Amino acid sequence: MQRVSAGLRRRHLLGVHDRVGFFPVRQKESVALLLGIFGAGGVAVPLSARGAAREIAHQIVDAGISLIITEAAVEKALSDAMAISREQGIAPHRIDAASLFNQTGSGSGLGFGADAPALILYTSGTTGLPKGVVHTHASLMAQVEVLFKAWEWNSEDQLLHVLPLHHIHGLVNAVLGALWAGAQILFRETFSPTQVWKEFAGRKVSVFYGVPTIYHQLADAWEGQELPTQRRWAEGAGQLRLAVSGSAALPARLWARWQNISNQALLERYGMTEIGMAISNPYRGERRAGTVGQPLPGMNVRIVTETGHDAPEGVQGEIWVQGASLFREYWNNPDASRAAFRDGYFLTGDVAEIQNGSVCIRGRSSVDILKSGGDKVSALEIEEVLREHPNIREVAVVGVPDSE
Image (cartoon, rainbow, N blue to C red; front, side, top):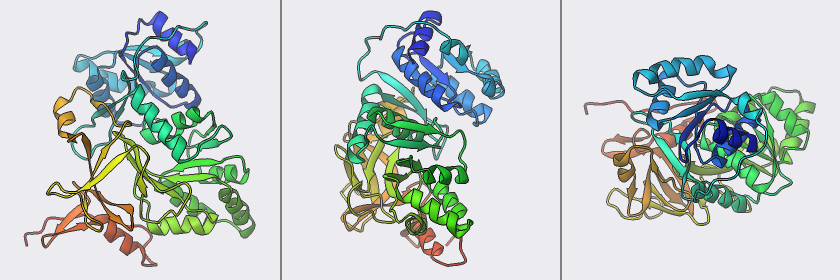
């Protein structure tokens, strides 16, 4: 980290708050790049090597990236993207990551405040081009500190990491969260269900973060094994201190499959790139399938109806969130930034309702809430019902126009 920071400042004249793009393809090295950019006073912009050239070029141009840290594995993706960005007048300086790691000495820290921009993450977005979500050093610290307390992280933990590092889940929740606690991170370059099960069986891993697709593949892999292997793998998963699911709704049937295998309830939570984690099932206490729990400490959450009132239990409304972990703005997009807030709350665009004191996500207001005969229907709720049929393995519900 110190070598990266020194190299950026000494050799490349990095200005405070300059945007620095990098491709987090090698995990350990990428963590050093991220922290080195922070230490040099820059704003880190993770780029996905798997993204289309036009998507990468949009991020380069939109963020006004002045410097890109590259390596051989991403040369093709970067060259194609740079050809497009040059046409739009943006041609960042390129440096090889190895040249930064080969630096000697260390650089002195810069005097930037906690409210200074630190990280720009691009949303996947449901409409239009991805927007750059600006997080400050303070909002990142707030995110990891709330999870440190709520999920009882400690320095003895070992996190098995299989998530991409250009999303908030893998980069902030997992990497920065583990580092904040002084825990160890065991990186795996690609996700392999068999490899993950073997890691669980080794009984060293204590924390695992995944998305529903990962848990689905893990359950399938377990069910395909002979009984002795199933027992060994299940015992390994059962000794995990914490297994978290996020980034998409967790089907209740999959929640039950995992509990049947591991005798452990997955902890489902709710968050977004813009807000970090806002709602979570409890670390200690009952975790309910089909719910994301209650607001985390310090997070103010409202479920607001179309009339602008707080929704009573059982009534759907949009999730509004307020708290220290919220992003500062959408980069270079003041109109979108203003539209995203009301009365100090961020409007998530997600629809939910309270059931027995827990938040139940019903989907995105723009795509998952369907109108049928004047009534609002949640596509996610329909999917849950259909999944109960023994001959239905997976399902997606979408709305189609109807003249009547």
